[in-house]
Image 1: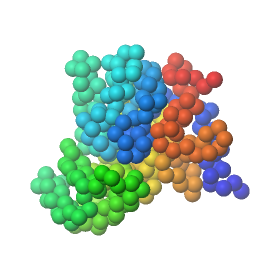
Image 2: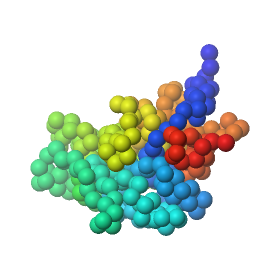
Image 3: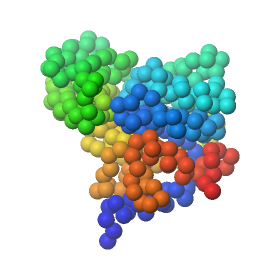
Image 4: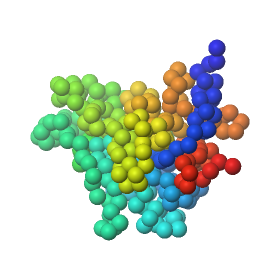
Amino acid sequence: MNSGADQQKEAFQQALQKKYTACIFDIDGTLTVLGDKSIPADLQPRLADFSMSVPMAVCTARRLQSALDILVPVFGHAVNPLYCQANWMLICENGAIGYVFDPEKKSYVEIYRAKYPYPEAMRENLFGHLNFILKDRLGLSFKNVVSLVFRPPQEGVSSDDIQKHCREITKIIQQELIPYDPKGLLAVGDSGLGVSIFPANSNKEQGILEFAKCIAAKHGYKISPEAREIIAVGDQPGPLGNDEGFLKGIYGTSFTVGNTHPENLLPLPVFDNKGSILKGPEATLFLLGQLSFRDGLGFKKT
Ligand SMILES: [Mg+2]
C-alpha cells in the first residue's frame, strides 16, 4: 500500500493531465512569500501573461485596497494592462465580498456582499471585547467591511513566530466567541499573518462558486457544479487555517503551496520534476508552468 505522500504524488501527476478553465489563488504565502508585501519578480509577468487569456481570481482575507496593493504591479506587466485587470476577480475578506473590474468605470465594483449575521452594535462589542482580551498579543486590529481582523506584531518577528502567535490568538478567539455567537454563524480563519472573523456561510470555498458564476456569465464557459475546472491554490489548509475549506476539495481542484497533509489526499502538494515538494510562490510559478488550459486558453504544456 502506498503512503499518503506517494498517493498525492500520483494524484498530482494525474491532475496535470487534465485541462482547466480558470485559476483562483490565495495571496499571502501563495502569490507572496508569507510576510512579504509584494509578489516575486519572476511570478508577476507570468500572472500577467496568464490573465490575458485565462480568467483569474484571488480569494484572500485582505480587504479590497490591500489586495489591490499586491496585484496592481502584476497588471503593469501585461501587454494590455486594462484587459489584464478586467480578467481578475477579487474575492476579499475571506470570501465575504466579491469585486469585478468595470472597464468603463476603470475601477472594481462590488458584486456580492455577505451579511454579517448579527447587528452592527454586536460586531462593535465583539471587536472591543477581543481587543481588550488580546491587548498584550496584538500589533494591529481592524474592522473591514464585513470581517474583523486581529494581527500579532510583525516587525522584527520571524515568520514561524508570527504563525505561532496567530495560532494562539485563534484559539483564544474561538473560546471568546462562544457567548457572542450563540447560533454558530461566525467562522474564524488563520492566514498565518492574522486571524479573521467572518460569516460562516460566506467563506473562501463559496468564493470559488462565486468565481465560477462570474466566469460562466462573462465568458459563457460551462462550469460543473463542483467547479473542478478551476484550479484553487492556497497555503493554509490545516485545521482553522483560512484555506481549510477552500482547499478541502469540495469545489475546484485544490493545491497547497504551504502546509501539507499527507493523511488527506487533498489538497495536493506541488511536486517538482525530481519529486520534491515546492512551497510558496516558487511552487505557484512551477504549477502554472505545468498546467494545461482549455483550447485557446493559457499555455499548453510542451
Ligand atoms: Mg495564505
